Image 1: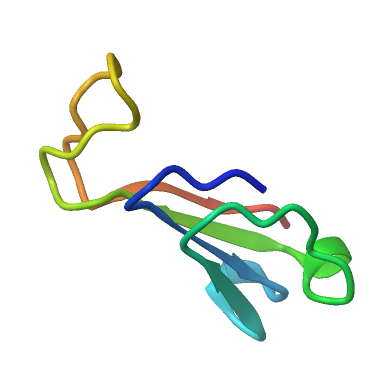
Image 2: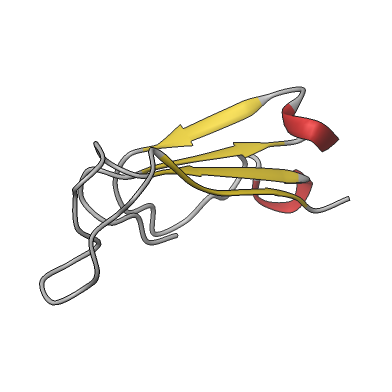
Length: 71
């Protein structure tokens, strides 16, 4: 999983952002034996408003960028 600098990706094993969770603040080459095959919800949080994804990308407008429940 690739996580841009300043961003946070939180994986949940339950739907609707419940259950066990794993918070990532940097790249994770492997999620083996963690939450890899059980992820049901994902929360992606941007750095502070006005931050950037990477050089040349558009400015981030909100703190929570993506919220998604997979089930």
